[in-house]
Length: 197
Image 1 (spheres, rainbow, N blue to C red):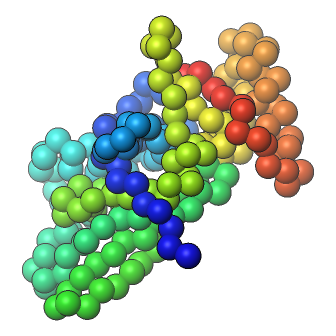
Image 2 (cartoon, rainbow, N blue to C red; image 1 turned 180 degrees about the horizontal axis):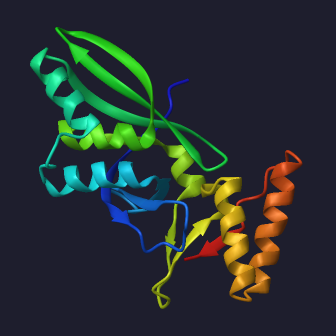
């Protein structure tokens, strides 16, 4: 059965999310409900995405720039990126390339896939089920953004837990602690646990 795909657009990269372990890469549904998706990425990946999104040239080429230049020189086009799976806050993507009418599919880290997609101006798609489960919700009155806990890995949740305890947000700390314990036991939390950032 073919997975239903929904096209996303890159909104931006932000270090303002309350994390010590990475940057938030924000994607949004291109049409329809305009739901958002958050990915946690590293500093190098955040820089590569930001440069491509803003159309800036790095002083020296990033690895993604090198791939783009080489692929383009040999007539290889990136046709699309598809985020096909999410497990414990980690997103998995396929890159669909085409050369001389032949198509090839490769597995890739989602941050790398998006950095390449921006350089090739290729569309980015997500499985509809992932977006339905893990989209972020924008509050009407509160400027904060609410994310499902399923969007974060155990390691990121542990960082949130330390921060919540340090800032004496004990109710949030309790929810995060319960989510971590359930995941470590192999359980799947129903999609009703959210974090406000």
